[in-house]
Image 1 (cartoon, rainbow, N blue to C red):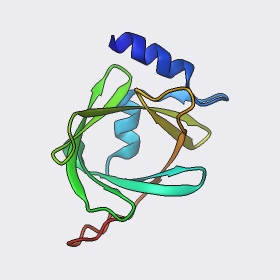
Image 2: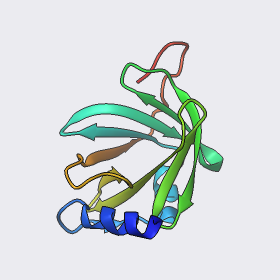
Image 3: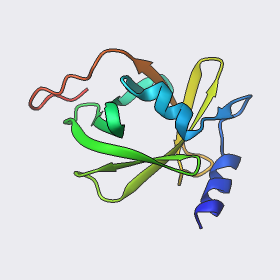
Image 4: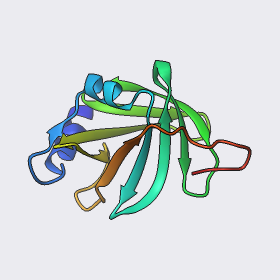
Length: 129
């Protein structure tokens, strides 16, 4: 089943010369950074990547939520105490630009542009991104 989902998602990969990131490449790129996710130039949320694959995630206007991630084949899968289930993504890179899509995304689902920032997220009480 997972292989079929991966094949479907790979066919829905962003157009162009993007290369699928390996889990090791993702870990090297993301650790110690805050990843900012945007769709069509509009920021929708951020995720701070801490050592040992720990994360803090916040949607725009939402609280910071603790989580962690693990690799599953080429997918990067996130688990958050506040959300049910596992949320797996594929990440691509091309000439310094990183894009991503959820593993279960359909062909018409948006492509997320992901940028890495050195600044930590502000997770003061009741403060999101």
